[in-house]
Length: 365
Image (tube, rainbow, N blue to C red; front, top):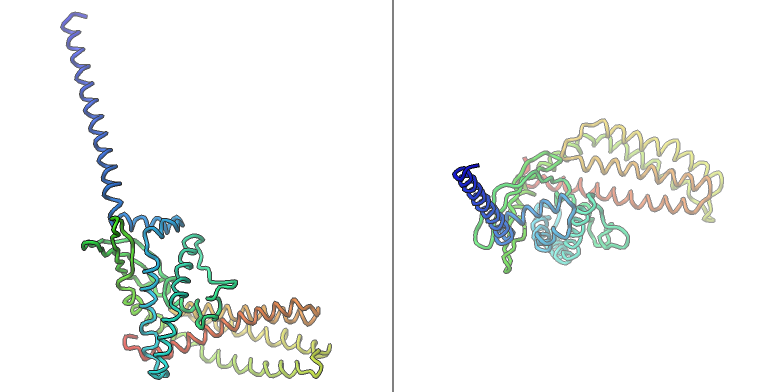
């Protein structure tokens, strides 16, 4: 290789090294800028907090969820929106009674909001809506209300997040759009989520600005469907109730005893009544109810009726087994199931009463 060619080769190599060095510095600069932007700027934006919230819900990460959502404030504001006019259109209540109810709901607010937070966190962790159990004060009606019914009226269990929308900034607050779908009626809605900036510069979801509007949009649709369903099934329910009342009278007559101990003849007649008449009547009633078209908004009520029937049948099956085998544990199981059935039936009665009252609400179509 001559000297000229050698110099050209060296010059080419030096040029390549300079280009590679420059490219390396540019890459390092881009990476450094990205890191600075992400950790110094992006994680201090409402966009980041909202994205982390959605990821936490998807991955069941309650620690991240609580970091990016002010659950105390969210539950508190949602409770106020849900209860502010709970009795406004109930013409059966006097003004004094309404005031008493309003005071009652203010008094139990801490327990209910804690329940809402725990229910939400359990839903994120386990993927199911787990109701209070054991010694929890929200189980049943220990607190004076039906927590499950309250949860149902919040629409939280039947609202699905579709995606997120635009975010509008306004100083230390921001409004984020979350597109949701109400599952029963398939009604789309855009929730406006208020986000607030902390003193440290990080953002949290604070509350839903238009949650009351969402409730006012969905409730009338559901109420109308429930009212239509009640009307469509009224004859079935009335005829069945008359039949059940007659069977109940015979049941009480068969259980009368001066000693507190049923005779073998009484046990045999009770088993025959339950197996040949009561249980078949329950199944027949449910078959007739299942044959009725269920409006979407009445799905919850229809499901409660099914649960009531299933629980009642199980109750009597255990009672029959207790009579046949004389096993106290079977009587206890039957009693426990009967209490569960009564809770469900009270829930059904509440829905029917509320639907009748809701006919006075002006915005029901």
